Length: 394
Ligand SMILES: C[C@H](O)[C@H](O)CC(=O)C(=O)O
Ligand SMILES: [Mg+2]
Image (cartoon, rainbow, N blue to C red; front, side, top):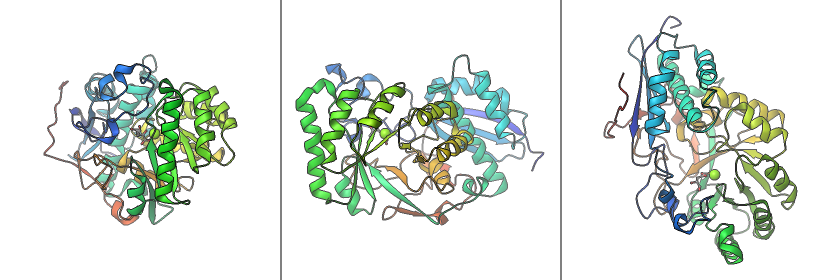
């Protein structure tokens, strides 16, 4: 196996949900007046698609080994990411050994430093890295969680993200995270509506069910502090991504300001061990939420997680379906996972990356047995019904 090399790397683009989960049709809860950094512009307040949240689409990376085995992964990044894979990164893979994951990561990261470091380029590197892990698992006929050192639990537990924590509770999830609907530009009235929504949900779910608010980078420190203080009486467990991901100082201040017992979480738009080092060393949050498809891939997430462990911080990855399930199963400091409710009304469980993957497992009663992950690689296939487009066929 050590002699197997990488023969071909191919990058495709896909539209319509899946890894680019904001790319949904009209009427979906995920695009219904959610507070964002763009909410200060009234014309971009109602819909995130109006300001282009879904312009990129999904990137599919396929890596073929010299024995014909194919590993693949999906993430966001679409056509510009496909360009980076085909025109820049492929050179570090083709001809390399399939086991050269660490070296390939370093070459991808160092060679793109002058235009990369975060965002799209790291999404792209993450997609390639995940495809490499999938390939290795398929060649060795082992699930990725075993390649990572083995699972530390037999079952994963999930909280659900969506507008209906009350339904998520009935479906067996351990908590519900709601999107914040009104940002600072909607003033005191918006703040009151945010708190009323939380209060209504608290009444529906009773005192013990976890409720969280996802603020998607939309607030300033003062508003976030007022929201946290007002939400405390409704038992808010955590306030998520309240500020810009660049505002490490603001997060450190917010963590001081929130009522005792309330957690501050962030990190889904942070990348690499260096970005997370800032969050951890500056005391920005209690839980970090890297997205394995965006933070640098699995190779990087392992490092980020070790760093978090040494800072007594939990790692609860953002979304990312099977790519995070295999990881969460292997870490003591990842005691539960997120499940994004992708049904338009958040009223039923559908696979997070639907319709792009075949065999994508979902939680049942808010839980997932490890045995459903016991398939080679990440255990999923590309859905042949999805129309792949290869814009930069070399
Ligand atoms: C609901 C949030 O606005 C976003 O779409 C997803 C997210 O940030 C999360 O799952 O966390
Ligand atoms: Mg979030």
